Amino acid sequence: MEIGIFGLTMSGKTTIFSLLTGVNLEEHAHKNEPLTGVAKIHDERVERLSELFKPKKTTYATLSFIDIPGYDLSANRKEKNRIFQFIQNADSLLAVVRAFESPSVPWPPEAEEPVKQLEIIKSELLLRDLEVVENRLLRLSETEKKKKLSPDESAEKEILERISQILEQEKFVSTANLAEEQLKRIGSLSLFTAKPVIVVANLDEDQFSTKKYNGKEKLVESCEENKFAYLELSGKIEQELNALSAEDRELFM
Image 1 (spheres, helix red, strand yellow):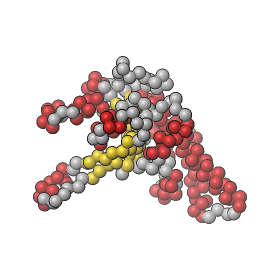
Image 2: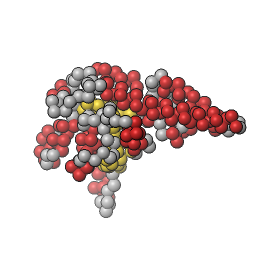
Image 3: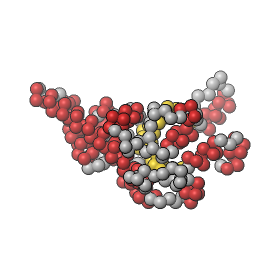
Image 4: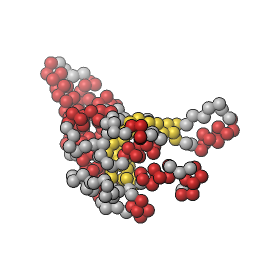
């Protein structure tokens, strides 16, 4: 499974990517390109079986991650298209929104609340999918003028018309409870809004200890409305823990 990580610039998403995959960010500093990495999923059951049977090699399940450059509100359409194409075929999306406070990291004027960051991300994905759906419907319409659509094409047109209405209502396709067969018909379009979405709120130390931050209620409410999974973590705390030895790390767990 591949998970695409994205968020606004300075959201801390690349730090989270590094923590998940162990990729050394210093080797990729200042490169406006996507980063890829793999996270091993440690499973106690696999470890116990390995101890019993002592195989030459123990293989854990893995998750692949791709971290695209931060979403820059001032970037032109060409640049936005370039970075989003890298996660077009991801199985799931992980959206990082910033909640942490830092005098050295100014907030973008248009996104001073976590929920505003999520709304910007949502709007971008909705518009991209709507464009894809409308283009496909246009091609089917042009085909229909020349000849009768095949049963598969007719079924595709019907579901695309429904999806177009869903997107115009600013709702994600994943919230529409479409049948598996319907989703298969549009699978080749790789719609962003048909993918599962996990929203990660990136907190500072104080926020993480109190589980409180400005705008939390609005963000959680938005996630519930859109059927997004919601998680909280502190990239800074995790980064500091990761720098400790295994023995010292256990003292803080």
